[in-house]
Structures are given as C-alpha cells and as structure tokens.
Image (cartoon, rainbow, N blue to C red; front, side, top):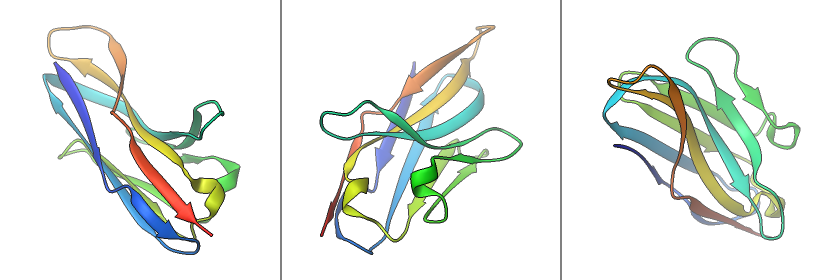
Length: 121
C-alpha cells in the first residue's frame, strides 16, 4: 500500500503565508513527479505546481512568483511554500505523486486526502 499524507492547511489573512507538506509512505520503489493540485468550490481541480525527479518545476500562472514547490527525495516529501496569499487561493489542496510500487513495473498516480486552505480578505 502507498499513502500520501498532507499537513499544513488552515486559515490565513490575505498577504499571509502557509506551508503545505506531504509525505509518501508504504511499499515505494521510486517516485517520479510530485505535485500539488487544488480544487475550489464549483471549480475543477487544477495543477498548482509540479516537480519532477530532475528538471524544471512547473507552476500555474496564477501562483508564479508567490508559491515555491520543493521535494526531499530521501524523505519522500514534497512541500509547497505559499506566500502573498490571496482570497482566490482558497481551495482544498491535494498532494499528488507518480509512484512505482515495489514489485511492480509501472507507476500509478496517488492522491492525498486534501487539506483546506482558506484565505480571508
């Protein structure tokens, strides 16, 4: 089994900061890309930021310059530092990872349970 567990959501005023963390655990052989998505009420889930094992990070235009994604391959974690938060950043944030399990030859996409981020104006 593989689990992604998120932490760090909460309520913050506009202009404030939050840091989200996600740890992958279980029978993991390797992890390819990791990322964060978000879903606001009445909207589709959208990519916020992604980081491959090696290579350039990718950000949604709406968060460029404000959010920073990072990962620790030794700990199987991915973090999202969110600065200068805006009310439109309010959403449930989901951790995502492409993981190859021990004993399997292919990767699956795994999702965390989601963590609420609310930005008040």
